[in-house]
Image (tube, rainbow, N blue to C red; front, side, top):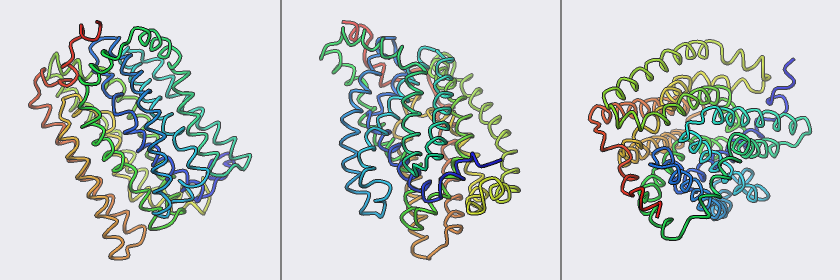
Length: 410
């Protein structure tokens, strides 16, 4: 009955390699485009939004190649050669660039309020991911099936979801661009590569450093348990959170400018509803995870069920935070976002340093990690809440508004 499950087709080691590889690619993608994709939702005109989409791709392509070469050299030094060295290194830039393209197209669709295509992109992404990975698993491709499936899912999601329309519009805009217009636009959005990109690097490291450190300290198999725990619990919650977050990202900048008071009310209601939905998930997960995981996925995956229990509250907090995660960016509070990223990453590094010094088991280290991550997410919610209480319309997209629309149109 369950032979079609990915965990029946791939080993914990396969998932460990896959988890480490995707973590590195996602981190690279967070900085490869200079975070210009985050400027798309607050663009003042359609031409500016499309130009930012085009510039994101142009910046991300060479940056992905350079970053991949660095990672391919650095990975084996930290015991991550199976996931990042050899033939895997050649796939790194393709995978990282595919993530940037998908995200940029998605933000462009949201600026155009084309929610149907944005939703279709997500569905195509999910369908392609499952189809390719299942097919490759039956053909015994090993970890390569997981990696290729992930990359194709990003590319197909972006292309079928709205990439063709975005590409046509980008070509029209590109024919009217000049070097002066591009440099003016980049200068107006300079906070994104110089402030937001470093913050994004810290943010991505905070998200993905745990699996990298688990792989280095406890082995690739342990990283596989963590990866499947994230996939089974974190990914579905993140998918729902991202769907809600798409609408929030499209409406929040305008609502902040029109009525900061209503923005605070909308924020508080959304957080409350997300907590209520996540609370039920915690109860079910804590009670049933190891039994269900062992029955559905196989006995070798029981340890992943225990990790799900330990990290259950963290998954719920991520579910709550995901839809509103760009709030500080929309308010222009980039330094606060950077400060929070530093705190979270420091907490994660301290956790695994403690685990090394005290020789903690995997379970013990995960308990400490769960406490650190829970506190960091609660602190982020507080930062966003306090920022919205003091919000004025002039704070929204202040870095983007430095460029007048007529400067771009000339």
